[in-house]
View (cartoon, rainbow, N blue to C red):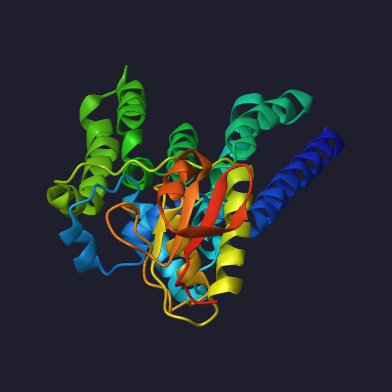
Length: 320
């Protein structure tokens, strides 16, 4: 029995280590996506005062706070903005491992349950992305483990509150989990030890941001992985062509946050922040999706870079 337990533990540890290693590699090498860049540009780069004055809704409050700390320590890069998600990925793996051991014990059945539990979130790259769903899931699963193992119900409630603070969309799933935990038990004890801590922790993080969020959410089309690679190539072409000259950039909604992230990552201080309303005024360079490239025909522009998804063009008077 002890030998079988040791084999199961070794296989599970090797599997979880391989999964985590793959996520670290993905976080370090994959180009930044438009959603990740938007979160950085609107809620991490500005000061707290600027974020509150913008009135934009932030659904990933806890993640943006952790991301701000990460880029403060390690500068702006795709890996630094994704680092909080990777750290909570470790918490998720540990919590799932503990839950499978509690429910299924040691053996091939529990190893299969472990594979199923990590396949979807890690296959979708939730912990290698700079947004809140990954850490919200990790905190919710950690709370479930704490309840099942009777470790610390107050800490479990705090984890549920942090889960909502990490991603506001998790409010309904967390509420369902809380109701399920309270069913059939003494409501007074479980309410005081789970529901109250969850509500208090969530409100500590969300009360101030939600009270200032009066503007409509901006819609930013999410890039596919291939589109992110093409956009990265277009930005490299822009950087090589513009040099150290002061330039103004008009960009499509999907490209605008990525351009601003690239500007911060490479400290391109000679670039003004890109603007998505590219048709309202003249810019030195335009970085548009191919669907919008027909607009370029009506301007005196020359194309510098083109692929299946993006077009980079400049005005004739733009710096050589």
